[in-house]
Image (cartoon, rainbow, N blue to C red; front, side):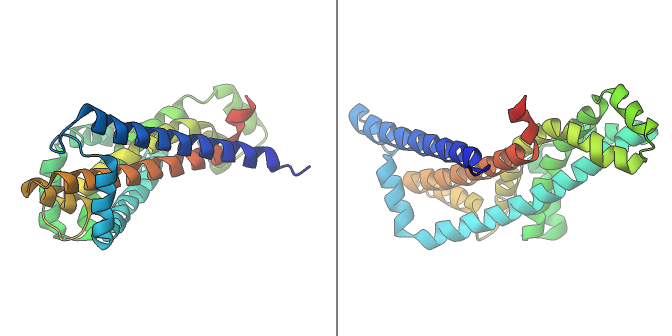
Length: 258
């Protein structure tokens, strides 16, 4: 028997359950709005929203790709810097006491205020939106990486040191793998935060992006277009979260064996 068959079957089963849940939500949305007589001003039927997207697919596709690019750039950089910060703060306590309070203060700045400054610095570019996404991503990853490293059993560290393991070997073979569950908690949270940062950045002035579509629909009181942009943003966020969750199952594979 193929060793990968059970894993493939489990993944296929999870996918089927997800598709069934999406279909159920779609049916409830469509029939519920029609039966309850809810006005489109409050909640349009799902079929009407999908028709609006199909009428101008290029606008929503380009907006989706633009926001995805900004989100991925900021998320990737924020995740890498967050893990690096957690390792450095764990290794050097003096550095943590010096810099970590500044990180905490930085997170008290409203994203709208920070975004305005970033757009002034970099203009209405992909880089500016990526920086805002980075701003919302790096801190939770830093905190969870540090917490994961601090929670490692000292006896395991002492055992590997007794076998002559170097600090880099300790980090790569014990500390980071043991901290992965905590790190992925932050990475899943950062999916939403980075997307919110990219969309908020687009509100300061741009021509392409889901945030632009949201703002245009709101100002023009186009309720169906507004819900179409919300639906596309939800699709992006859900897909991104599912991708990170899949990566977590692959990276933290021992959880299924516990």
